[in-house]
Amino acid sequence: MTEKNENTVSEQPPGFFKRLRRKLNSGDSWLTYDLAKLAPGGKIDADVLEDLESRLVMADVGIDATEKIIAGLQQRLARHELKDVDTLTEGLRQSMIDILEPVQHNLVPDARAGPFVILMVGVNGAGKTTTIGKLARRFLDDGYSVMLAAGDTFRAAAVPQLEIWAERAEADIVRAQQGADPAAVAFDAVSAALARDTDVLLVDTAGRLHTKVNLMEELKKIRRSLGKQCPGAPHETLLVLDATTGQNALSQARQFHLATDVTALALTKLDGTAKGGIVFALRRELGIPIKLIGIGEGENDLQPFDGETFVEALLER
Image (cartoon, rainbow, N blue to C red; front, side, top):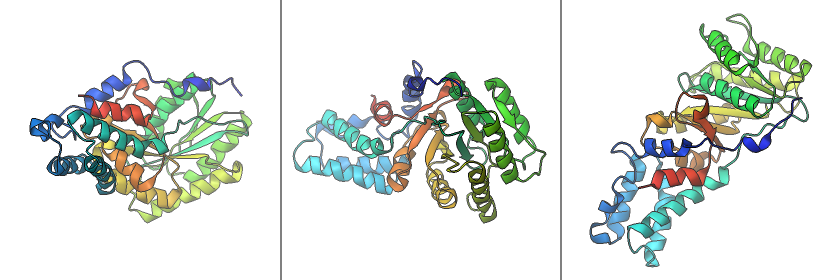
C-alpha cells in the first residue's frame, strides 16, 4: 500500500467557501435575504419569526428542520434574548449549527484490512460520475492507490466517461462489455483490487430512478457481490444528490437508504442554487452524514462538508 497523508483530506483550498458564500447569497430565494427588513425598527417579535419560518420552508429547509429552528428562536424570544437583528442572526446561526454538527464527518478511507470499498449510487444527472473522478484524484493526491469499477453497464456512454476520469486521475479501472452483469463487474473489481494491493476501490453504478424497484434490488445484489470478495464491503455507500432538485433530493435519499443502507451523502451543484436549505432537511429527517459538497466542475470544487463553515456562508451579510 502507498503512504497516505490523512491530514490533507479535510482541507479546503483557499477561496472555496468564499465562492460557496457568493453562490448561496445570490438571488432572491435566499432564506436570509435582506434579513434586517424582517424587523422594521429592529424589533423582533412573533410576526418576524413567522416571516422567517416561511423563508426557511421556501429555501428547502423542510418542515421538520424549520419547526426545530423556529422553536429554538421562540424560546429565545420568550427569554427576551432576541433584541435586534444581530441577536436574531446569532440565534439562527446556533440553531442551524445544532442541526448539522452531529453529522459532520470526513471521508477518510481505512485501507489497513484491504481495499476500502466505496459504492457510489444516485439518479441520472446528479453528478455521480464526476464525483467519482474528483474523489479518485483527491485520494491519489492524499497518497492512496485508487481503482475504479465501471459498474454502469447499461448506459452506452457510461464506461467511456469513467475511463476519461480514470485517465485524468491516473487511476486503474476495471470494465466490462455493455450489458454485462454489474454485480459480476463489482466482484471482478474487488478481486483486482486485492491482487494489486489497492487502497481504495470506487464502484460506479447505473443511475437509476429511486422509484424503480427492480433497479433498487440490483443495488442489493451488487452489495452482496462486493461482500463475497471483501468481508464488510462496501465500507461506504455514498449517495450523490443534486442540490438543485430541492425536496426531491430528500425523497431520493429516503428510497435509496431503504434499498441499500446509505452511509454518507455527497451534495453536488450547490453553485446552481441560491437555497442550500436541503442540507438541513436531509440531516433532520435522515441523520445520514453529509461528507462532501460540490460547487462546480473543477477538481477542487468537491470538498469535505463542514457544518459550521456552511452556516457561516449562509448567514454572511
